[in-house]
Image (tube, rainbow, N blue to C red; front, top):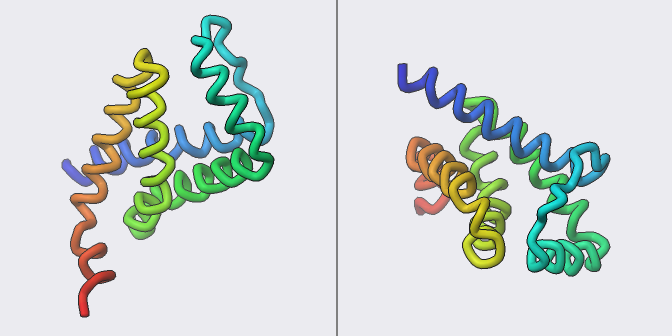
Amino acid sequence: MKSKILFVVSLLFGLMFINAGLNKFFNYMPVPEDMPQPVIDMSMHMMGIVWLMPLIAVVEIVGGALFIFRKTRALGALVILPVMAGIFLAHLLVAPSGLPMAIVLLIILVWVMIENRRRYLALIAE
C-alpha cells in the first residue's frame, strides 16, 4: 500500500514539475492578476539573466520525468532538490501565500529522499 501511495504522490509531483518547466518555454498558464509586487520584481530580475529560466525549465522537466519512475526517482529527487530549495525560499521570504503548497512539495521530496537513502549512501561510501 505504501508503495502505491508513494507512486501516486511521485507521479503528481513529477507532473507538476514537468508542467512548470513546459510553461516556462510555452507560457500557456496565465499569470495571476493579483500577483504581489515583490514577486513580480523577483521574476523580472530572474528573467534578466537570459539563460536562467531555460535552465530551470530543463531541470524541472528532466527532474520531474525522473521523479515519476521508481528506478530513477532517487536521481530525480537530487535533480529537483536545488529547484525545490529555491521555490521554498522564494515563498518563505517573498510570497508567503504559496508557502503551504511549497511545504507540501518539500515534504514529498524529503519523503522520497528518505526512502532512497541507501542509494545516496552508496554515492559517498568509500
